[in-house]
Structure formats: C-alpha cells, structure tokens
Image 1: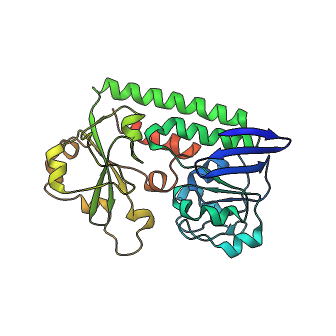
Image 2: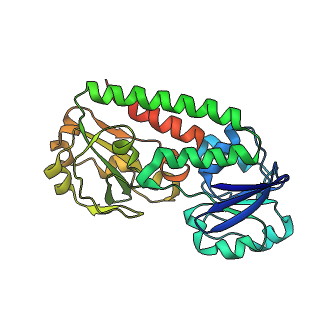
Image 3: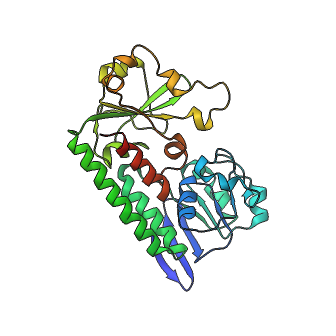
Length: 288
C-alpha cells in the first residue's frame, strides 16, 4: 500500500486513490472504529471522530477532549474544514464522500477485504504502524494474533471441524453470513465448516427464516445483535427474537452452542488490533 517515501512524507496508494501523509500527523480524524481501535492500542492520539454509537470499550472517546465530526454516515464537513486535519481515515461507510473529504485533508481509505480478512487487517495496521512509527508494536500485536488464530483453529480441529452459521439479528429480522463476508472470519480464518457455502454475500447478509435455521441445523450458531448497538428504543433483543420453538429444535440450541457475540466488536469496530483479538477469543471460548 505504501508506494513511496519522500522525506517525511509517505505516499500511500489505496482503493480510492492516493494519500500523501506526513509521518506522525498531529491532527488525526478517524471515521472507522476499527482504525480507532488500532490507534488506541498503539497509543496514538486522535483529534476527532463520530461520537454516535462508539463501541463501549472505546467509551473514553466520548470525552469533550475529542472533537465530534458528525456520524459514520454523515461527516460534519464544516467542522472538518475548521479542524484542517493532517489525516482523515475512512472505510466503506464513507466511501461515497471520499472526494469531499479528500479536499479537507489527506484521506486514507482502509476498508477490509473480507475475501482475505486476516491479511487485509494486517496490511491496514501495518500502514498505520508506518505512518506513526509504531512498526515494532504492530509486529508484536500481529504475532499475538497469529498465535490466537492457531490456537482456535486447533480447538476447531479437535472438535471435529463443526458446522457453523453466523447470523445478524436486527429487531425481528434475521440474516445469514457465509464465507468471504464481513463475519466470514469464523469460517475463513478460524476454521469452522460453513453450514451453507452458498449464502449470498452482501453488507447486511442474506435474509433467512426460522425454518432455514432448522433445515440447515448448524452445530454452532453465532449471533450478532445489531439492535443492541444501533437499534434505539423499542428494538427486540436478539435473545427474545430467537426464543421460539423452531430455534429450540436446532442442534446449536440443544447443545448450548448458540453464542451471542459482542456486537460492538463485530458490527462496529471489527478489524482493529484489539477487536480482532477479542473476536478470536470469543469464538475460541465457545469451544470446549
């Protein structure tokens, strides 16, 4: 991704263009919670971020010490113009406004390629390590991640490579995610057998019914409760949505293998150094 160094400036080519970023930029605005997670792990200060739906473990960024630059979907361009950031970090949710953001400061697009999740995360954090002179710290974190992945894959193998399905519950609606999707790391990285290799890949998953869960009957059902982090009042919790007789007929329910994942990690900040490690641990802890 880094294609050239010109003195203290890095030229970084990304999927939307090219960013010219000075090493150790001082005013950093982050629109991606995964990148914020990584910068937090590396001890890199940030100036501004969207202050809606901040993951619980990053709640310190709700402080007035940090500027509010809008929401994940709607940046506050006036505030950004006022801040004159040295670096703006974005991901897929801001893709459509990249051109406008890039006029206000060097804008770096760090989305995750879900078809190669682990490698894509590594590349993103290494770029941030280069920008902020944190290469050694990044290498240490990545070594730990590799060890965690290997340990969980070994547990999955020891358990006979059980089948799994990852679902997103949004109020009363359920969608499924398979390999090469935003939650595909359960299969692609950690080694579970996808119960349905033909799930349509899309941002919000493939809509499914309770009957689908009974028909596919996975050994493990991993649940991301979207409503718990962005749903607001009146949204039915995932545990209540799944509390019905059809779900109770599945092996996952009968064997105590319905796993409710920490939604702010999986839905809001996946791909950060801290969140990736915690996601691996959550899946690993579901196994005997």
